[in-house]
Structures are given as C-alpha cells and as structure tokens.
Length: 404
Image (tube, rainbow, N blue to C red; front, side, top):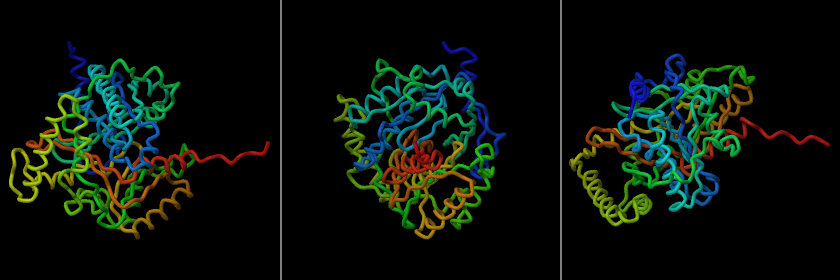
C-alpha cells in the first residue's frame, strides 16, 4: 500500500514546472533536487564498441531505448525522468516503483542476451549514495511539445552513476541479480524508420562540457558555450526549429517492410510472435497509406504526426555535459572541429566528436491520439557511443610512460 509520502515523492517529476527555451539550461537555481529515496536505474552494454564495429549500431540503440521503455511501462502512472545514451540509459525512479523497475530492467538484460547476444550491465543506484560520495542530482523538465518532456540533469550525479556502473567491485551492492529476470514489457517501442541521411552532408555527434575553474579550466558557463557553438556554425542551437536538427520531413525514410521488422517482432514473447508479426505488418501498411495519402487512419494523423516527430526528438540534451546530434555541412564540421580543438587546448572545455553520414532514430510511442511520443536520435556508426570514447580520451588523457 502506498503511503501519503510515497504519493508525494512519486509525483516529484510530474509536478516540476516545465521550460521550453533550451537557452535556459544553464539556470542552475531552477533545477530541483531529486528526492534522496529515489534510485537511478542504470544500464550499459558491455563491449558495445565490438557490436558497433560489426555494424550493429541499430541493435545497440534498440537495447538502450528498451531499457527506458520497459521501466516506463512497469511504472505506469508515474512520470519518470530518463536519459538515452546510445548504448545504455538512465531512468530515475521513486522507491515505491523500485521493485517493478528492477524486474523490468532485468527483463531487458535477458532479452539483450537471448536475442542480441549482448551482455548488459544493470544496477539500481540510490541517489543518497551519490550524495554521500560528494555528487548531487538535480533535474529540470524540458518541454519538447505539450505532454512530451526530456529531463535535463546537473550536479555530477549521472557521471558518478555511470562510473560506478562500470566498476565491478564498487557497484556490487547495487547490481540487479539474475533471479529478477522476467519478460520486459516493451509496448510502444519501435524501430521502423530507416537511417536518416544527412541533408547537409554530415552528421556530427558531439559531447562537450565546460572545464570548470576547479578543474583548472577557464570557468566558462554552458550558455556562453552554446552561443559560441552557434556563432561557429552560423545557426542557433537553441531555437525550436533549429536548422541543424537531423530529423526533418525530407530526410524521413520509410520502407515496406521495415529493415527493423524482424527485431521488433523478436521483442514479443515467443508465443506471441506470429500475432506481433501480423500486427506490425498491418500497422506498417496503415502508416504507409496514411503517409502517402495524408488521410487519417485511426489515431494517426500523418501531417500532424510528422510535424510533431521533428519536434519531439532528443537531438540536444544536457546532463552537465551538452550532447548534440547535428546535421552539418562539411564546412561547418571543419569550423566546429577547429573551434573545439582551440578551446580544449585553452582549457575552456572537454569534448568528444564523431562524424558520419546518417542518423538513426528509435521511437517510443505512448499515445498517438493525444500526441504523446518521443524519439531517440543517434549518429550512425555508433555516434554518441563513439563521441563518448573520444570525450574520455581528453578528459583522462594517457600519461606518458616514465623511465624506470
């Protein structure tokens, strides 16, 4: 039975005020402290780079998105903040939903192992532990469109949780055991769009973080950094209709049957796969008809949906580190690379960058009738994962060997 206190903390994220101006991500006093009895459900694919090298970046993204989907479905009725990281994800949950969320995440681990052949690290890390170790966790709710939100985080808690997840010894008390594994409910998760070609020539996956004075940096703030990036690229990165967003109507590519059809069918229980196959094929035919004719089919209004889809993507987000997936010209990429290198050498920022020619999109559809859907975007060839690796080489550069 839920207590009054449980109900209050369960509504923590739902009751947060929203903001819709990305330029305001630097307003530190507007972030709210995540309650100490909440947990971070953290996940990460072991050796995801190997899968990416094999061209399996769509599978990698699908597992990362599945971690979010399964937990949201398990905690139905409670709005939760989440972050998609390409090869993993983090979702914050209240203590009243910890058991359901743990089983859901363990179910994704089982699915990833049995269907994809991936090993998935998973853990439930108490927010209180992060604070005991010197980090904080504060969150703000960015509104993509009415009813659709992305969580922005600050305080260093997410970075600490990610490091803790990958430390086998330190994370042992928080790891989720195999006996929790059940079948994850992945309703709403789909991967039906083909890769999105870069309209401007190249897709840049970028991670960039100001280097603080405490780290020996110049102490530049994130808003200044956003402005400088916009000046270098010749376009604003904070406008709703950002010209460098990778998802646009002209780059959307839907084929029948979708390349991801088999994978989506495999997400269903074995006994339900024939039914799932028939349902997905029917939905694809209905979507294609609506998309080509512009006619409404059931809850799908194609013109409205495509317009919302371009808005409801996570191509820009912030969790102490600014993460961007941008469609740029070769000239913009050259100018961006030169700026980042200069600023890094000057001690102003740390960055990671990956360039490719397409983007990937994985979709989470809550309710089409009421326009509730969010779309996770990543650069092709493992964009965000590869950018994170590049970032770490600058954050922790290898030390030269010393003579014995």
